[in-house]
Amino acid sequence: MIWKKWINVFVLGAVIVGLSSCYSFKGASLDPNLKTIQVSNIRMETAGGPANLSLELNEKLKEYFQRNTSLKINNKNPDLLIEGSIVGYELTPQAPTGDDKAGLNRITLRVQFRLINRLDEDKNFEQEFSFYQDFPQSQTLTQVEKALIPKLVDQIILDLFNKIAGDW
Image 1 (cartoon, one colour):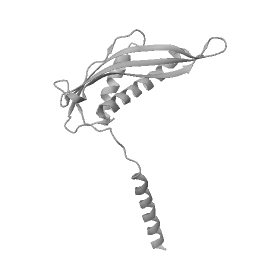
Image 2 (tube, one colour):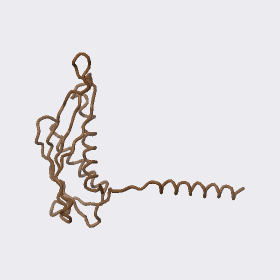
Image 3 (cartoon, rainbow, N blue to C red):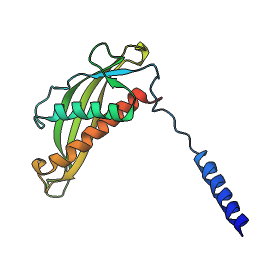
Image 4 (cartoon, rainbow, N blue to C red):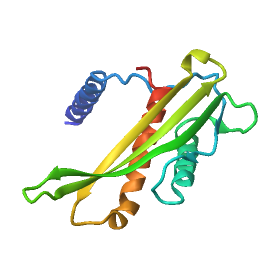
């Protein structure tokens, strides 16, 4: 009877190995020669938005790279330099209803980033990243801002990281 248990364990292990080999994950790797990163203070170049939005974005960006890479924060001659500006913070009506009111409102955050890779200039870029969240017309921006802004910031950081570390 004990040999049946070992056969089951072996079969289960083979199935797990077989399934895991079906997927290959491409991208999300940094050049191992990269050791340091600097995130310059994100500038606020648009009206609107909370006063601490650029600080929140800046700190979350540093935290993301520290948590998900082996790069060390270094403000003197870093291998990677990220500079950014918040260039848009807009509230727009969406999904009009029959009585000419918006059924939803949309908050959009747009951030222009510039990456300087001192080890490989071909990886340098300047690009705008944006993300939005919709919320019901029955709620005000003040009511939803504290919940939605972290989602916007997190997605933009993820998109930026994928652009830097992704192979696509």
